[in-house]
Length: 509
Image (cartoon, rainbow, N blue to C red; front, side, top):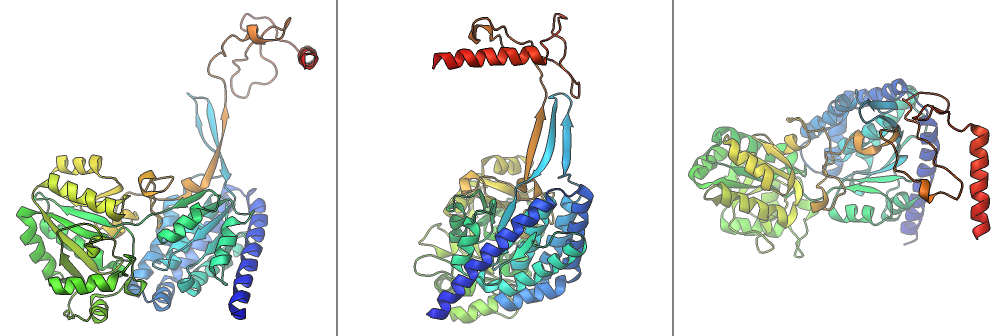
């Protein structure tokens, strides 16, 4: 008991120390030039990319989730691909000028970011969050998931060493090692913390939103994939099986159920089976439901990110060694059909509907059961069907003819490369973006006059006339002439007017 209390206290103290040190370093880094910022970020990204294979193996070994080679690919994506996507985005000084609106946008950091990272994608998420934070001249402290502390810290350690060699102030990037719930809560609530970027399970995200600090959180996925009668069925089968098998389905945008148009259902099933999809019997489906979910309906963490063979052993069923994913025929959505929910493992639901409208309704039902705002995949060539899905579905990433896993994070699409996918207001988040540097950058605006203010002379004190507006162009110095050519009041005259108005106001109190 005493050792547990001591561990919690050490965690709380570590959180305080990291937050204070980070704020001090961030205040120094806030004066860095764009060139200095980019040099630091480039060095950190390259250091992680070079060691991606080892980091991927560390994440797999520590958590037991997924496939080491796939985790390596995610680390490479989070370092090089993410960095390339933000490298040329200006974040320091003048960002842009609008000559029509007569405004000038100026970049400004948020401050200290707390990055909560999940066990499913631990070090890849940490790498990505460090890069998008530092690019905006923020400091960041990573709070790892307790089951992924070492693999997360190792990636952040590489970034710290590379960043400091490139001129980053010590303490700008930090990572908790004494991880506990009280410590993470202290970090989120600490006075030095400016914003929380939360990626993980629903309880973690809710905790972030309850701190009273600004927070960007994500929600569950439960992404459906609709296969229309107009689809290239062979290509759809290839995408579905490979996406679902990728890293044993731990990316939140992975397809959780297939909804297929009846005329192509048999062909899709056959093509998926040829690629390693194994259909389970009704009895095996029930056993998987009991294995993947707790009696209360929550995910069983021991079943997350497992191969079909590992799941079969846990459920007491038999599956062939060639099985890459397990597929269950489903007819309902809801608590009475556990496999209709988000399954962060290699199990896929399979629905057959007649026509795209019925398929549309089923997809909405699946999203509302646990994936509102997140992701939907559609395989089709009929543009009217694709557009109808884009307009109607309560999802902010609608992926066309590609993998759910890699498409949603921006690896196979033009979406912003990211490991945090916000589901918008419908999913409980303040934004609907693939979170990137734009979301962690404040913008100041210089605004010059475009039009004359309304007449206000009647509201002034007796004897005080309205001051003429300037209409001066940006950068003009001194007091401009009045519209009728008369000179405006000089500094002495302005001071006398202000003093008289203040005296009169004071006399009325």
